[in-house]
Length: 96
Image 1 (spheres, rainbow, N blue to C red):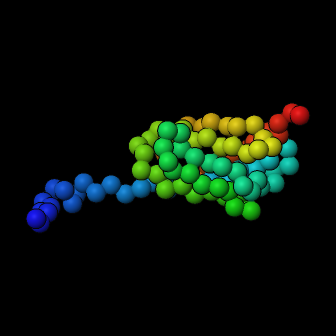
Image 2 (cartoon, rainbow, N blue to C red):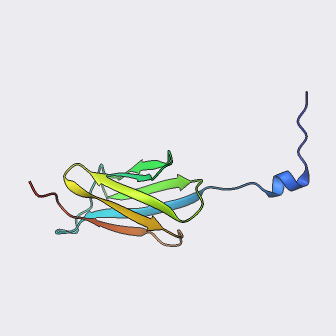
């Protein structure tokens, strides 16, 4: 059985959005590697590089909520309404 696509089906192709940014220590401004950044209620995620950078390809419609987690820092939730610029996230160290 062959599948036939019409022209209107082709025009409705949706491309992913790239959400990217950098995560740093609020006190030192040093980049934080191995920070888990993910889209809430989705399976789109990333770990930061040694330079604190992350990139997520998202199929979600805006706005989306990003969760930023690191074992030694407080978790942050931010709402992203567009992806025209890199997101800059500062994390506060947890009190022990």
